[in-house]
Length: 375
Ligand code: B12
Ligand code: SF4
Ligand code: SF4
Image 1 (tube, rainbow, N blue to C red):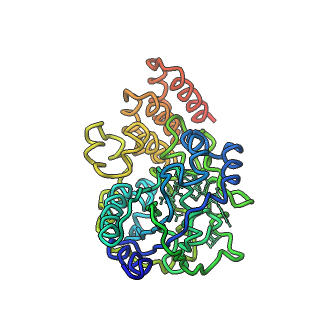
Image 2 (image 1 turned 60 degrees about the vertical axis):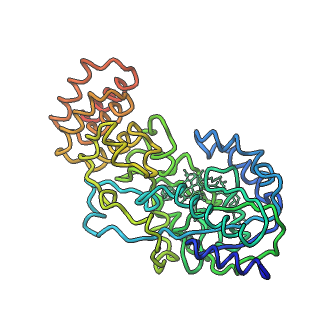
Image 3 (image 1 turned 90 degrees about the horizontal axis):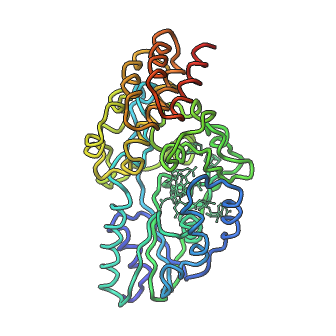
């Protein structure tokens, strides 16, 4: 390979990576900001982020031979949800990134192929990283010119927008740096800050992840704080509000990646239908999907919250069935939803459940829900 950097970018494109940049290995520059963020409690219950602190100081902690980082980005902007479905609160909203196949697997496969192609040109070894690796992905991607830090904390590329997945290949060879020209900025725009339903984007432009709907619906394993539930509207897995309002995404091109094409069932599924999923049906419906991460209990918890926010009496029957679910987490959130729907029938259903419920947390939810139906 006479000019490896050019060929690597070309190869990256062949394997679907629209953006690629090469950086010489260096320790992370924003690790103290990361440590402060953890200290402030913004990571909520994501304990793995605390465990990663020392490893994130330098990528050589995960691959000591690293000489060069190949930063990559792939576009996942496929299509939009048709307007009538988009505005229907009885349907769930799923973040765009989860409409197709799990990107962790898709990107890993692509990176394996890319690394093999690089190895045909240069004698080298590489370590593949995507998302879960203890690496400050946004910092390195920023340094490679993939995008700037938007106020919503996402990396934005002036042409592709922010619907981008990031990943990296750590290489044990020294290659000439090749950084993309960084263009664009947020300027005076604050749309995402204003639009965020839970006020998770802080004035210092960091994110209080413990308030972010993405965290609440995906990462949080237990009960969703009651004060945040009404603000989640019908988001049942992740949230895209701060990216949907971003002007840099208005002209974002469509992704060509087949694996990210949405499954039609995930564009705007009916909430009551999802609430009846058994464990087996859940596993089948979400095979190869990132949604498996929440497990059925987390997913149905989210659906109950969305039904409470929709506030339609048509869903009382489905929620009543969920009050008998084997998972206390689902029963508790179903009770909350019935409290939000309110009215005589919801009240009767809750009173019945109070007679038989033995779990103290669920009982507490029922009592509070009944208080709400009274007021
Ligand atoms: C934990 C996590 C979350 C948490 C916390 C998010 C957050 N903003 O911190 C939750 C669950 C909320 C989340 C949500 C989402 N996530 Co997430 N998440 C991660 C993960 C695993 C770690 C991020 C982290 O460490 N956060 C802590 C903060 C403090 O670190 P940071 O954001 O990386 O910022 C550091 C540096 O970038 C730098 N920095 C920050 N600002 C600035 C500004 C300047 C000028 C400079 C120089 C440096 C700098 O300092 C920070 C501290 O070191 C990364 C993958 C990874 N390994 O990095 C994916 C990742 C950030 N997530 C991603 C995605 C797609 C999402 C969602 C869009 C999914 C969804 N639709 O629901 C949302 C977006 C929500 C949002 N507004 O951020 C993508 C982002 C791609 C992009 N274009 O930026 C990543 C990179 C995964 C991937 N491999 O593609 N996520
Ligand atoms: S993903 Fe949603 S909740 Fe999280 S910061 Fe963005 S708009 Fe706010
Ligand atoms: S909405 Fe505005 S402030 Fe927020 S990331 Fe986009 S350009 Fe920046």
